[in-house]
Image 1 (cartoon, rainbow, N blue to C red):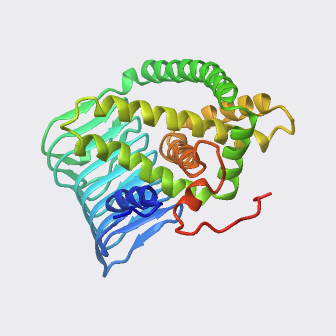
Image 2 (spheres, rainbow, N blue to C red):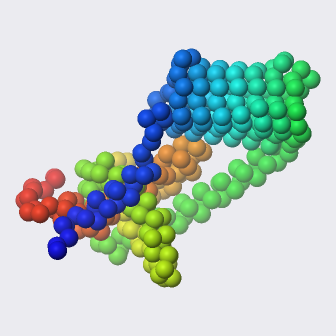
Image 3 (cartoon, helix red, strand yellow):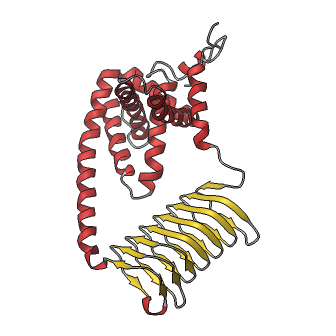
Length: 328
């Protein structure tokens, strides 16, 4: 029995499916706000780069890079890089780098990190109320059933330490990645780097899908091959090589949008510096830019056969490859 060519591509896509499938009652959006009406009851509401307003009922509400307004009911309410306003009822509430405002009820713990807490008269917290590097306001008129912890006086010192750490990390990364890109350009050669850039430019959607599948495969394969001791090491090295090759093409692609130079090295270095800086932007860089660039890099390396041809994987997924003109 002959295994059809392209099996690897569809295997990676199949491995990615469990991570992207969601129940019909869930609502997941990127960049577009979510509204749950008063007569609605849904499962999870997840928003990336946008905000959520809940007048009805949800199981869990998660906003990354956005805020949550809860007038209805939710089990867990979590916001990263945004505030939470609770006028209704939540089982637990956690706000990271955003303020937590409570005028309704949190049945168990309410936690704010780097944001502080505001309590309106009549607000209720059933268990612990915690503000890490923030201040709790409005305690006299609120009902808190557990312990109260706040550490706002240490916030200036902590924030200055975080800023210094991030600046140092940016400096190290900006110094390291251009050198790594130059090494990869030397190893791959101008032609392969140009093919990688062309693959990202012309087939970005397929690169994202295939890169996501490759990432899922890197997680699943060590579990499947648990009986093979070197599997973790081999897969880890393969994943690193794949990412390094792909990032070289992505850096050349990004740099080409800002530098009109015939030098692949100069364009790649500029692209590497820009990607590094973008990835260090709080919230947006961590949770959006980094996965996007990473999936593009992995997908471009696989789709192009490590810079062989923009249609390398596509041609091998066809029983009778179709002759194609060059993309450019």
